[in-house]
Amino acid sequence: VVYDDDHGHLGGVVAEALVAAGGETVLVTPAAVASAWTANTLEQRRIQRRLIELGVRIVAGRVPVEADAVGLSLACVYTGRVERLSCDAVVSLTEKIPEDGLATALRAMPGRLAEAGIRTLEVIGDALAPGLVAAAVYSGHAAARAFQEPPEAVEAALFRRELPALA
Image 1 (cartoon, rainbow, N blue to C red):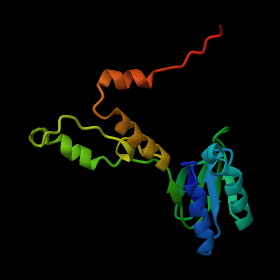
Image 2 (cartoon, rainbow, N blue to C red):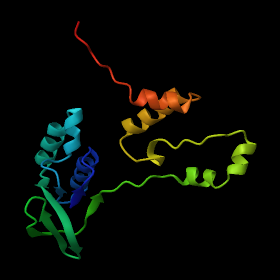
Image 3 (cartoon, rainbow, N blue to C red):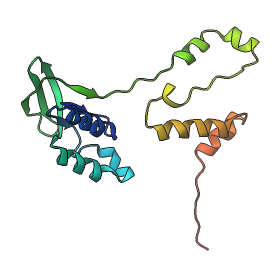
């Protein structure tokens, strides 16, 4: 069983890899479809079609509430009704935890940073909040655009809105 609470392409990729390795595979998701977020990138239909063609059973609208040596108990996200699903193993794609070890270590040595001429430390990308590669790239791009800008100018740009007016 692949439990996909990530909703990106990875759940489908892992399920496909398990099928290729010879395993009977079930993809469980709390969403209404597999890899739901990929509807935003126009990949969802292709991913779901591929999984169906490979024989992956898709169990939508369910979350695991208990696991033991022989399977999972799944609750319906709408009714709360619980059902059992037998399985040998579970791959869980869930919470992503920031990898901020470097930032934490640097914050612990402000004197050394000052000696090196470093006045500010900005945490970006997956160290701040794990996400898609596109989000990490955007985070780096935004930090580069804001580099050496006064903080008030950066904040003003965040909340800038275009207000069209009709003449």
